[in-house]
Image (cartoon, rainbow, N blue to C red; front, side, top):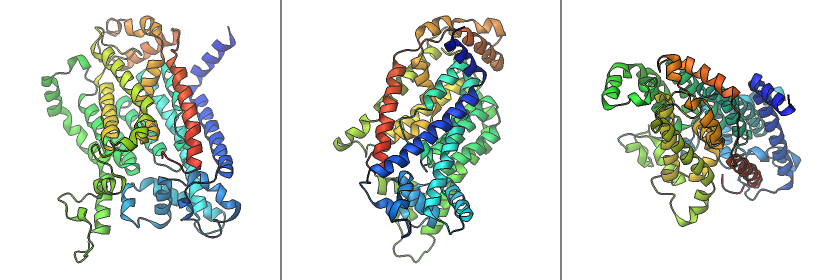
Length: 466
């Protein structure tokens, strides 16, 4: 047996340990590089010094803070230290900021001093690094149950090489990714709808876009176990009538952190009836500050970002858009264009996956038409479908022809409802199949390696894009 084959078997026997150790090593190396670069590259912008006290804002102490204190993290650290003071800060959900406050306070207490920005930043970088490790493991577990062992491992390895330095920084994406992946796992694999709703609620308390997870939650509860070939207007209507009640509480849980925070914002900024400087959003029929702040301070809105000056910001995430669209087309073709109605990776095409892909395309559309499009470079770590698409496009067609896609699972299992039997049988067949990779994987890894390096340098220097 060759060494390569022995290595391949060892990875498939203990993949979670391999993923966890590799992810920890990657983050430690990246944090070290960030600190080294911070001593070599002077920041272009000095706004990171606004929240540093005089004892830290001089000398070498500042250098240890610099890697984690840029762009939105300046807002995060300001809120974690002093609370919500300014209207524009209401764009950010409070959960991660509260965690940073607690962890920073604990670290300051251990050092025998008052709450310190340096401690908040450092604890945030460490916390997010470990949360990102959890995201890698969660993505593997989710993909393993939906596809096959080797496909899950390939997906996770690709995920561990993201085109962004964000997993090492005090940003919201790592925690949002972990809670979103976990919520999808509880929803689709375990069918624990209440637990899924609670997990998605944590995601919404981290990022406001978590409210869109109700699309996955409600769709999967109502239609999830229905084969795609059985989808029809009559079947959907019947499911809505008989199963929609199951989605009510989980969906309310998912959106409740957003609603509670909007209520908090209204009470904080609009509750005084005699205030002559009351903000315009206070008098709206739905006085939600989130949309107002996004438009007023970040110029988000339908086609607001579509200008000649922003063309580079559309080009930067273009590789992600391309693999997302290509991978989605491949999935839809294998789902609706195949007579056997089985995906190319070996799982019968229940509506669960279709719902995830619909959600994926809706979120891409939101980023393309109504947001700062370049943030896809960092939010890509929160969407499992992006990484399934990359892994699927990386697999050679030979595997798909010889693999489980052309096996008559319906004849083996007797009916399409035996989800677990199909998955186990797909796992057994996929393990024995050769896995040849296309050249696209080299292109993707090369792009991620180059851009993540450039993005890390730009981050340390406080240069766009953020």
